[in-house]
Image (cartoon, rainbow, N blue to C red; front, side, top):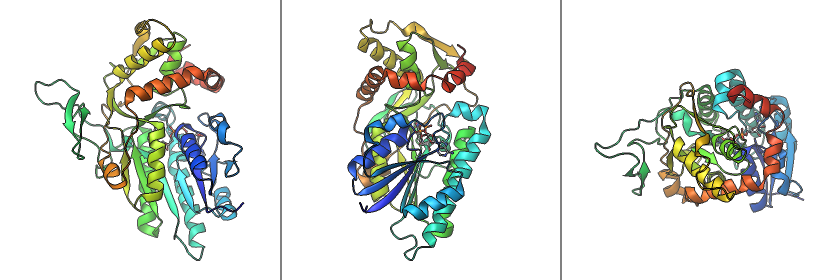
Length: 379
Ligand code: NAD
């Protein structure tokens, strides 16, 4: 079969990447989709069981730091688009092992950029019709204050630059123009990779796009991250380790909404631009945990809230950023994207998925992950 174009999606066996691969493989049978992934502890081909036999899908096991191998792949497959999600993604791991984060997130991204540059510049049409789309995080912007109008307890109603009202824990937001100010080794490595991507546009004219997204949740997320970790622990009546007082605020987006944004931006986003992706959906950690407990209890037929006593406050994460809040007005107004789900619906869908897919959870929580879990939180 001949395909209209060939797109490499890096990190396609991970959480967000698997949703992006699934969306593209299903929606664009005329594109060839190559999922390039090293399969670290976070990569899992079981995330893509439903599409692995499609004629327009191919998996390649590769480390993004392997410049030679990636350059060869670009040539052999005539790659004209790259959607780059492969990364070390867990802040706690970056605190323990920052080198791995610099290697994969910084050197790996640079390696992809340089291979793409050499291959695309060798073609007669050069960069025409090409695209290097880099997926990043809102954590590069640093932390926001929990400011609130006098006499009013947060969350309070505020207006984004879109003019729409929503609830917030502070007056400030992250905009595309917000200065980078990363605090963790994870966010520092992502910030650095974002700069390299923009530098390849500014220096060589590569058609790049960067997006910075808030916290994602949904099916297939590795259970070291808050929501799947807690769903699994509640199910097994294990303690729920909450950092500090659980007061930290994050903006949450359902993973399929992120994947839809990536599709829209890959096709219609402007070259060299940055887009913030977020749900205008701020929650304190402790409030999320309560919603998750109630939902799990209800779906398991337990008394609602009966597992609240599993909440266990633990020493706060080092350098824990207080609040992240993204203003995604630009994306909403220029490209017409909007989040499709209310948080309560998204959580319900997510909890149901993890409860219905116990086998997936058992597989990923065995082996190496179990060792990691024990070093972090004890047996
Ligand atoms: P994840 O940890 O679930 O998946 C990462 C994937 O990358 C895994 O499949 C892993 O095997 C692969 N990978 C890691 N190192 C590699 C290497 N050296 N070579 C090739 N593959 C490698 O991560 P995720 O949560 O799906 O995040 C995906 C991307 O989105 C990351 O770039 C992350 O920074 C960004 N992001 C994540 C969130 C979030 O809430 N999870 C929010 C905003 C942005």
